[in-house]
Length: 316
Image (cartoon, rainbow, N blue to C red):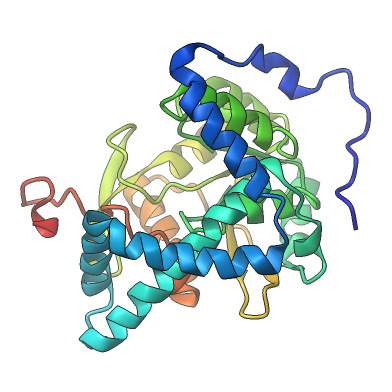
């Protein structure tokens, strides 16, 4: 089954991108984008096999990131013995390798093969919130499946996204154009006003607030039983827009299919306490991680900042 063709529109969001940056400094990036776009067209079963091999290669080459992942797994799963954590580490890098092909497919390829085994659950929760005339914030975490799953969900709901821009102009242009093939809009984390306007008009906004970014208001709340510096963005966006907040879990199953699950809207959200609301969001993301631990992005220093320790102390 081919990808559906979007309905004709005089307001294609890609038109606002302008011309791509083509200066000599961008040429190596464009070369990489071209290679990735070609790899995005390989058959999906082959991509899965290559991805697992790529993950094993990255586990050997990215020593610092491997060490970060090992430390995160030790902090989050103290009940596992060393052998079990090493097995989870290997699985997480294998999933990361497959995830890189998924990102390329989401941005520049076809997701028709993934639609065949797709399961979507909980759309009634989204419809209920929309029927009440509210915008909807859809919260997930940084899983390797996030980009492809967001694209698949866009078949069923016109999601906009909030993201951190890429550092190089060519990559930012290519990725944003790829995302705007399926997303209703894309807002950087600094574009608060247009994101709020989108929500107040009844729009849907997806984002993942589970990384320590040093930008925006944050508080320490538990994540796997340990203090984690966490953005209060979900509380702030909901408070300023009146939007409902739903969780979005997404998993690549062992059979190669995908399950996308929307949870009921958080009851009584937002409350008066930003810390309590942020703790609820992080607890929901932790539940998602426990359901598919190998597909979470463990190579990020989630516990880099701690209340009573120097930055990075837990990773030394």
